[in-house]
Image (tube, rainbow, N blue to C red; front, side, top):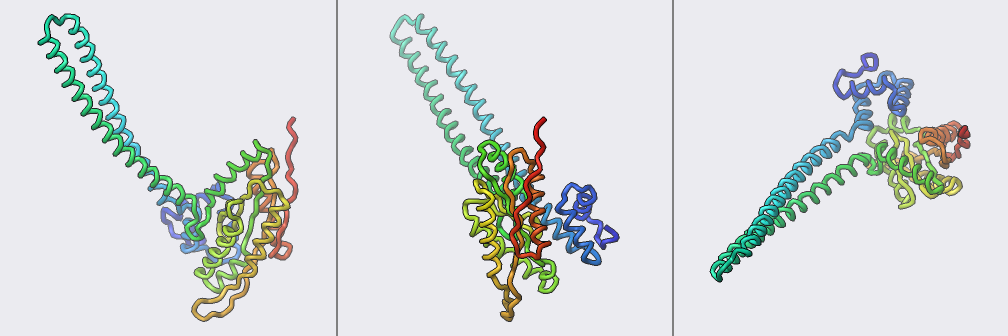
Length: 329
């Protein structure tokens, strides 16, 4: 951290400890690339990397807070139900006592007194039941609100703040679910990795604000073309991934090519002067899941195909090599 001009703050310690541990290969690759191409990483870039990899802590805190409130509300419901159980038991005992007294009645006055007492107890039980219903209704409405807040917080924690599409966490969750589904259903599943060509050079030349605009534009095109057929995510930095369930490799390659063409037609201009900054291009690696393949291997094949596309001159779509799966012994 000292060599890279990074201040010893809690956030920076978390970021660089993760880098040193090697637990986040993408983070390591991004930092290594920065070290290779810049003099020092510094605090500004460390902060951007922190937000990229650990920036959902606010949403996590909201989930924790909402969970605690829901837990407290459920405790209230349980207490009310215990109270209702106690009232019901007492009412049942009273009815049994009145039942025993009926056998000993000798005159009409006694019957009248018993019926009057029974009516009084029933009325009291009815009042308590209505009160319980009202309280449970209020708790039900409060729990629904808390659940909505919790769902919103979870959705926020799965969304990339800059581009509005899924983040790395959503990618991991959806990929796990879709690979399991593909294994069970034997339906095709494809993965597209895309990377904005020469993005660092663009950022260094025109600034991070325009660089952010490029990322937003790419995400918009991905979301538009993917529709409901797939899940577009920002994998990290200028790298994107689209998970395409039910899509065989040829269709996924055609999708990536359509996305490549759509992005390449966009020309960036400065808002202030209208000066043309050139077209955006992207490179893509595409692969299809093979049953028995690990998720890491699946992702690695897509990533390797992406780097092959960049090595071949960029602005290309490249299919991945077939998986190497060991036969079960």
